[in-house]
Length: 261
Ligand code: ADP
Ligand code: MG
Image (tube, rainbow, N blue to C red; front, side, top):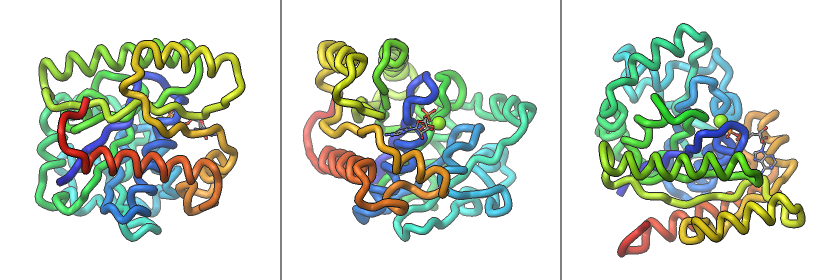
């Protein structure tokens, strides 16, 4: 059965895009048919996937405005099991128009339920760093959410806001929304900030934290410059292996029966 996972938290620079790209690539390497959607008008995910404007036939927002069908905006990638829908909004005016277009909370849900997308086992959505608008409609359509967090006080307050918002989404538009997990990113085991972050996280959200942590790793940063998921840039890098482990953890969770948080 198809699982739709939004990668979101109301803070920039915590590893959302990095996680969306590398988790999607790792699921594909694990032979799960996966679709990655860049749902952030800033288009970092599209740049990371190596798509320059001349290679883009259309984006997810064309589907919202009924100018393209979803099948027309699906792009093949270097990985046979990974397809990609980019974002190609390059002006503030376009972004404002987009906010208006996306006021229909259920439209994205309807798009993701289309027959053309029924063969995907996983759909991964890279959300922007704000909650209202695009993240809200992504959460209205998702089965679960991955929340990336890096060490620091501000990340922890963003996480608390996210959890409160998930609870309000459950009470309004999406009762089935689950927390897939909280993911520690850019992890550095011997810093005081990391230790303090861990302590607070485990005290308040222990049950939600993924076993896998993503270490701070230069191969991840470098792979962005080459427009490739880290696994295609350096398969044995610590960062690649960590995202493969995360994919396994999610696959195992998906196959397990019984209650999920
Ligand atoms: P967000 O989407 O939350 O704004 P990004 O995924 O764009 O965050 O990451 C922000 C920056 O942190 C990027 O420049 C990226 O290269 C870097 N980064 C993310 N994860 C790692 C990591 N595990 N190791 C090293 N650098 C990382
Ligand atoms: Mg991002």
